[in-house]
Length: 242
Image (cartoon, rainbow, N blue to C red; front, side, top):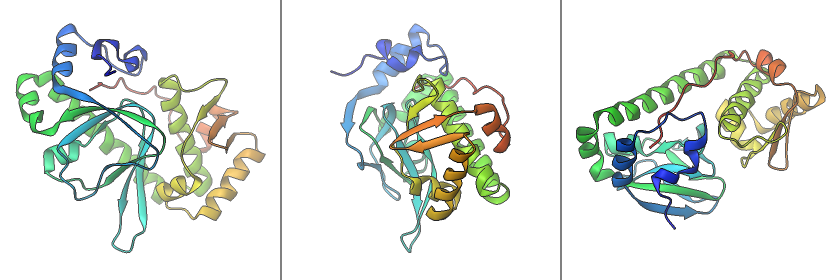
């Protein structure tokens, strides 16, 4: 059964802006269906010209770029509510790939209708532009992390950011959340070796700041971890939802 936009489970989370009735009708008209995918399924491929755009309704994934020699740079992690494929919609092809790392449910939109949607719903078009700006801001913070934070600071920063999104999406229970990624994914995101990442995670565990094992992230002292990662304590901004 396809989820009606009026009954979208993401709408109950405070992370997302509220919808007007007109917003709901316009998005419901833009949406053409849903698909479910298994872990490891490519959603969008670098260099491809996908006819579809997606919103992650459930599950998590990875955005990454692959070099000519096969090495991979993880750009960021996909969470429920993220809008996927905008780059292809605006630039005709993807500059990076997106892959599911857990079972995912995706809302599907036709890319061919994007410009019509922009023209008929300028407020929603602004929301999509805002999402692109947020991605740019995050990548700027990630670059600063790659260049200026130590491994301990970088991993602390990443775990805080991940945990913040998890809390805002109702994925955290008793300071723990499911995290269906590999240590290699985190290492690739932060430009670290797997060995260095593993040793740093062990230090975080030994200091009773955080533990990531068996697909579960537990944060024992969020404020101290935030301090170690030099993460500001500003609340997450309200996000539009497509």
